[in-house]
Image (cartoon, rainbow, N blue to C red; front, top):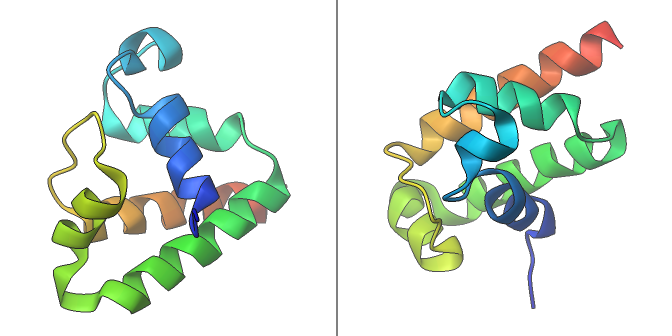
Length: 97
């Protein structure tokens, strides 16, 4: 059972080997911005909840557990930083809308 469908969708549909073709860039900040603009507000809100839950559930082993759970196609060096960047972009977008 997939407890994190929105994280899974982000990784499978946006952060994959074809990311530069899909988003027109391979820069992490621009990819996040592309995802945020392409995703509905309710899904973004649910994604933030998933990020929070995953982080709370996996604490100090966040990077290892993320790799084990999702096996992403692209290298994400620091999962906590990635989650924080996502949250920041989402909150900024939601506060402007």
